[in-house]
Length: 359
Image (cartoon, helix red, strand yellow):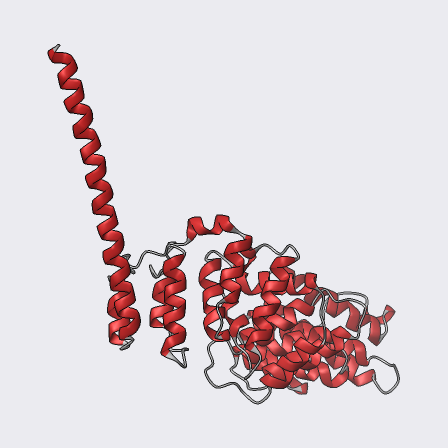
């Protein structure tokens, strides 16, 4: 909105002569906040603009940079709720221009950048996280960490800003409560798998982090509805399945959900069989054998009626195809033998019962 447009905006009805410019700006800010609470975001933007116009005019006489930063940040939030992502991003960056240490503006700039597909989002989250870590209030740290991970959740090639942010996250030594909150936030967003993304050579760090959090009391259920699915994906990326083995040792009750299917009908074996993350087929083979040993049923189809053995054939891992086939035949044979034994016992009881009745 231009300066001339702002001048044409109607002035609210109150005794203006009794108020100075700062009071007027505060009045308009408060009115804008009320409009925002009522969902009138366009009205809120107009009133924030009126307040900004007044403060920018008097800034040479009154120190009001922080007030201007707050107003631009509020305006950014209102624009965000209107779906005007780029305008929201520019307002947030304008807020940071007036107060480079305003953490809330970093948060607003980051989320607006995410929606507008800006490449700046990670670096903005990173800068905000550094400021937060230096402050007393650490309540928003998990939000910023989650923001960095979710910013690259669907990316195959990470932007150059990601690795510095990633390195900072794991060198800052955030406490367990922050990491637990971060895991929960990612799970709520349905983005826990972004926890599995990382720069080269860092995946073991994430796997050990998850193991440490669970060992000190973090509930694995905070990962989401399908915790074992999330953990096996992490193991695939970490190229080691020790965390999965350790988890089922620590939480044997989770074996009751070993054949759980996710929304796509996939079992743990479907995830392993269809993964393109394996550099070597023997790693995939090892994971399949581990899951079979824990009792995962390879004969369960997914929602598209795909069987694990067919997926493995398509991926040409014939070693594990043979292992799955042998496992299935063995268990089918065992089931038949068990049924034969049960049938023989029933027949024997009936024969004995018939002899007693004949007497």
